[in-house]
Amino acid sequence: MATTPTSDIDLFADEVVLDPYPVYAELREQGPVVHLRMNDVHVLTRYDTIRGALADWESFSSTSIAFNPMANEALTGTSLASDPPEHTRLRAALTENLSPRALRGLKGRIEAKADALVAELVEKGSFEAIDALARAFPLEVVADLIGFTGHVRDNMLRWGQAAMQVLGPTNQRTAENFPVAGELYEWCSQVEATDLTEGSVGRGIFDAEARGAIPPGTAGHIIHQYLGAGVDTTIAAIGNIVALFARHPDQLALVRANPSLAPAAFNEVLRFWPPINAWGRRATRDVDIDGVVIPEGAQVAILLGAGNRDPRHYENPDAFLVERNPVDHLSFGYGPHGCAGQGLARLEAHAVIGALSRRVDHLVVGPEVRVPGNTTRSIEELPVLEVIPA
Image 1 (tube, rainbow, N blue to C red):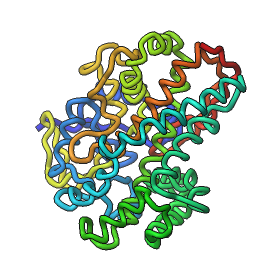
Image 2: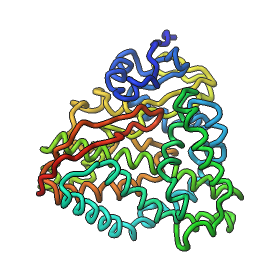
Image 3: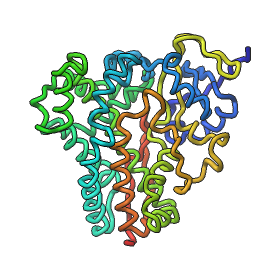
């Protein structure tokens, strides 16, 4: 049996979450599994190991996706934090309204929304890209889709951000966000079908509960996932699209010359800068990986961002190349827990990429402002100083 490589890196230190890639390169070279003493977690660092673990739900349980017990307890009963067969049933209700067929009718509306918003911003000539585009667009799309109104609509951003922050270890960021996440948990435990607009996906989830397709009392949990897991990550992804195209105008030009590259471009954005870099699992048994044993009961951190930059899998992984089209990137997960909302995220992102490539030659931006986060790695502010129209 091989000795487990160890490291004193703190996975959640400010400097690591702001720029994790040098640390990921160091950990990958230590081995496919490294024990972090500071966090008491076993991290999976290489592409093949990560993909294998995501597929093996029997060995790597989702009952510990967070890195603190309070958040894991709060998530009990959700498809995010359950394993088959319970997960299979809960996820069916979640994906029923997010299948390609269900989303087909939304495509035209989402594309029109994105094009109108980008056209308006190009006309202005300068704007703050995160507030004006990365937040404004998905918040409106999700609110309309789920049927949120009133104070819920107003609190979506706060609640979505807090829901992701509390997945971290018991640090200051987690402590500060628990009260806000608690507002979301409380609302989801009390929400009724009549609180959501008629004909919305939210109403449809309550219909599924009423006909017995999902267990009683779980509709609120599922709606929590739309808001908690879907809003903050999509905002991060759209912010990353703007920033990466501003940094790489040659790549934007490739999409402008060939609009069918939009899906490939989004795959590369997700590979290069995943919204979520680390996600939790619990080892249900002793797991041997290349002679290193992860002990039963150990907390595991699956380093999606490290796998996405593994040179064993991707050639020249530190370059942003839209023609690469990494369809097998890890940012949406893999296996039974692959992101249920990825169809909607793709619709939104492809619409934004399409609108930018049609209307923008290049963007002149100021410095990105980032704030350390436990789970989502995103840009807080991105001033667009000048738009050169296409």
